[in-house]
Amino acid sequence: MYSRDLHKKAKTLFEHLTDEIKQIKLKIDKPANDIDSLGNVMHALEEIRKKESEIELQFRPVNEMYALLDHHLADVLDKDESENNTQLKKDWEKMIEQADNVRNNLQGQQAEFKKSLIQGINFLIVDVEEFRKNFVKNGPMAPGIEPREALNRLRMFSDEYSVRKRKFDSYFAGETLFGLPH
Image 1: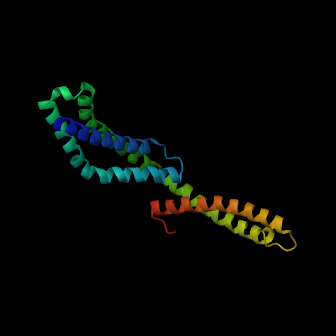
Image 2: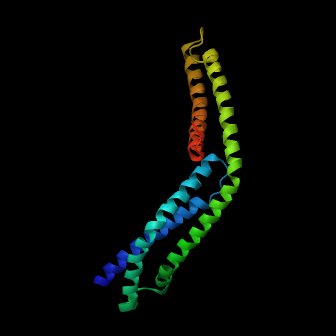
């Protein structure tokens, strides 16, 4: 019974670590095409860096449990599970190596992303000013329009505002990422 409970706990911890590594790997595998995706990759790289200090403390109990099971109760473990346990640390090390490659590639593209961010911000500033002028002139408060038309205009401007708000949030995150003033 003890061996079954130990095996169950070891397997649960192992699966948790494996899933965690896969999730982080998926994040750094995504290409950084724009500011949003760059931010996601940078957050994943930061997550890896933070996790590096504690990952050995998470690996050790799993390895010790499997070593105990393998030494005393080898019949409890199937061969694949035993091999997967040794593969876990190798997968982590491969991911660290991949994260370093991604970080180096992004450093080379930093100037392009920053230039694109600044251009996007400047375009958004002009676009918002035009949007505001258009809203004042043709929005729901324009004189002489029916209430139904005012409601339709309000919905239309609300949708257009949502698009600009998403861009603003994205650029704000980009400014934070590059350390630019907001």
